[in-house]
Amino acid sequence: MRWQSPRQSSTLAEIRSQFDALTYSGVVWHPYEGHRGIRPFFGICMYFGWIWIGDTLCRHLPERVLRQFGFQQYIPRSPTTIPDADVVAIDHMWLHFRAHVVSNVRHATSPSDCVDGYIQWFRRVSHPYIIVAADDARPALAPRQRPDVPREARPHRRSSPPSPSGALARFRRMARMLQSLISCRHVTEGTVAHQVSMDLLQIANEGIDEYSTTRREQRHVRGRRSTSNL
Image (tube, rainbow, N blue to C red; front, side, top):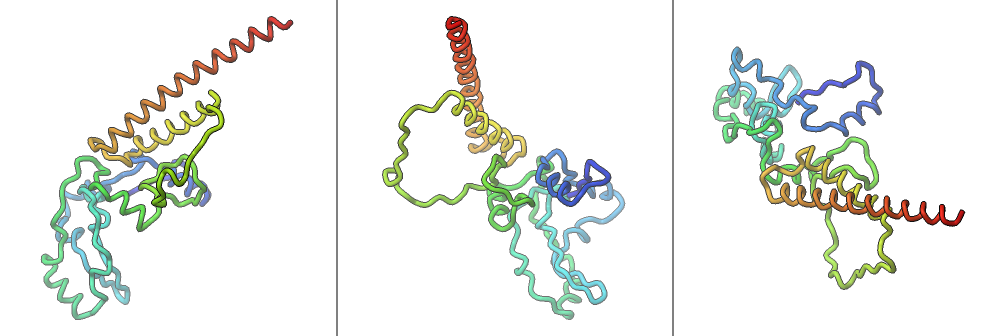
């Protein structure tokens, strides 16, 4: 992935905020595409194992960033599946590198293409946002765990129906969250989750229209009452 700050000079806090606000369209997912015609690809980039440079040893795990190479991202193996560094073993892997190349890949149908369940896996093993925040309108990438409590054990009673202004605010917040979820492609188009999100967004927008009309009518009635009292 490659990203460039919209400003030439940004503070660390601003850059973190920019990262958290990134959408799929703001990322160059395939930065090496221009080199395909002049450099060998699979034999170099798709090798998985240890890389040894001087006194430095590090794991090279291309299956964790497959979208950079134009492939669909799947849930990768644990880094510990590659044994600990051993000089003799590393030399042997380099001599037989063709046996250590990631090959079970699919070409991506879109730059951010990933298998079902990848986002939920990423949510568990990493963090989708840099800046830690309280519960807010940012889309959660995976369902939050809820206690297995029977519904009758936690009744929810409302003494009076919600006011139009309160309901309108909730519908607007719901619409913002769903729109962000869909726009950022945290739900895959063509799946049941995507269709349900679209349906819920439509319901939220209908609620906004309904309660916006109710509030306008109430303001109109209050205005008429105020005029009649003069």
